[in-house]
Image 1 (spheres, rainbow, N blue to C red):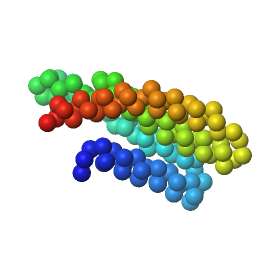
Image 2 (image 1 turned 180 degrees about the vertical axis):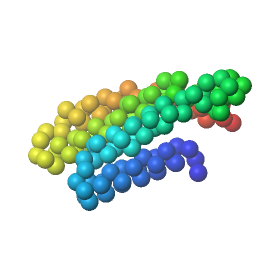
Image 3 (image 1 turned 180 degrees about the horizontal axis):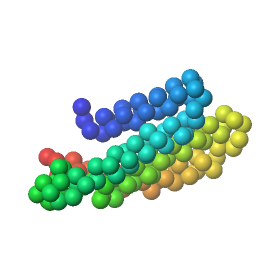
Image 4 (image 1 turned 90 degrees about the vertical axis):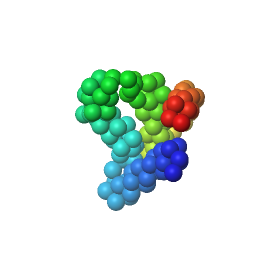
Length: 130
């Protein structure tokens, strides 16, 4: 499976989980998505950050630049995934009868800034992998 397709499927599964939690236990979809899409990868990175340093498990010879040191990784984590979280909160606001327009504008701005950086980084990573 292509990496980008796997990425989209993973995001879709997490959105489905947040919808299920919303329907079953009335947990906010925005909160669930913030934990799944941003918190989980960030916590995992912080827990295993020492593996990325020279001599570590993921970088024994010190030549590999960890993903978390690349701008595209942060654009994905905070802007692209963040936009999904903001959209979830916007839907929650709309369902509660409040205006979601400011949140949707913020999400659109996050995508407008983050998408080019993310796609450029992914292209570069895929070109280096071949």
